[in-house]
Amino acid sequence: MNDIDSLIAQIPLSQVARTLGVDERTASEAVRAAVPALVGGLGANAQDPAGEQSLAQALERHQGADPATLFDLGAQDERDGAKIVHHVFGGNTGQVVDQLAGARPALGSDMLAKLLPLLAPIVLKWLAAKWSQRSGGTATRSGTPASGGVGQSPAGFPAPADAGSPSSAPEHRAGGGLGDLLGGLLGGSGGGLGDLLGGLLGRGRK
Image (cartoon, rainbow, N blue to C red; front, top):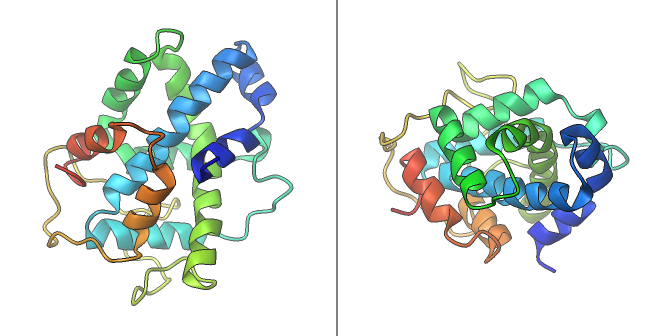
């Protein structure tokens, strides 16, 4: 079982099913669509230095989650989740949701649009713990200060880039950086999702 599958296995499907008003089988399919999309979107945004730095700062803000409530949907801040989703996908959120729903006939766009903000805080807190372990107790990238920059949202991200607008920062893939961690976590579970998200966000793999 890879890390993404391990994360998915810890999300309470009974809570997801009640929240979405579906059976647990459909809830499981929805979670298996949403979680890799969130990780893939974070990975696409971490492919340049500015995106990697802002993500590191967001992870620093989401460290220290209570293990007892980490996977409890009822304990998540849905407003924070909505901000995370917006800053991951920007104005392309609708396109991402439609792409995910189009590949899974049992799921609707409305269902996935409702689920993403519920799962986003869980994914970010879980990733913060993974990154902290990997980087020796701090969620920041080597050489990156932990404090947030001017103009950041409470979720810890700067304003998202528009589709088709590549970052002005030079192309960068730091060895052992957040982009590599996210790519390794996603593994084969996302299929071509990374390429799709990278194209939509104007970052990542072209």
